[in-house]
Image 1 (cartoon, protein in one colour):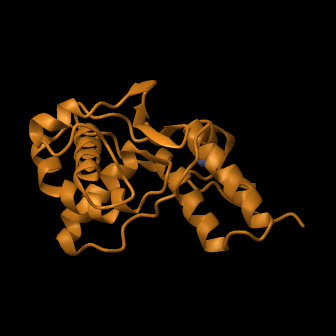
Image 2: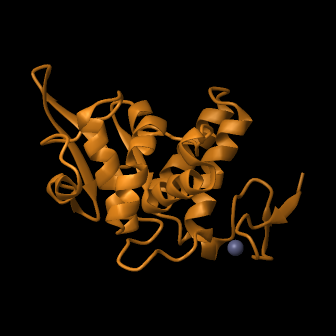
Length: 199
Ligand SMILES: [Zn+2]
């Protein structure tokens, strides 16, 4: 069987085998962490562990990193990743670390905008998750007022839903913000959150 389809990036006319998401040139622009997520979702799909619609959502997220509009002034590129891990030692929680661009995202900058907590948390509604939501929107938009306005909704819609480890991108965070700008605090059906991932 030799079906083919167009590269999934909008406006790209390159034909690729149906089993391939996008052309080589565009695939090379997808952040490494997202390529790994697609590979993992595909093998899970082949094993029958995830539905086709879940695979499509992961693939759409990878495509979105290439199609994403340019970042606002001072904000990181759409493919820049944020990754959270819980560090435990002897069963005790030591830290909730958030990494980005080869370094650590610290709470202090967001605490100047609104001070909820000395550290980040996620997976529930509370002070630590509010600080993380604020810090992520602040970092991804470089807009303190916008971050102040929508971080509570973002915490509720996204950050409070995350598991032990998570991965998101600046483009995704801005996608949530855009949804909030379109639909307000009632916006419910926010972009898919995939937990885990990264290398
Ligand atoms: Zn292409």
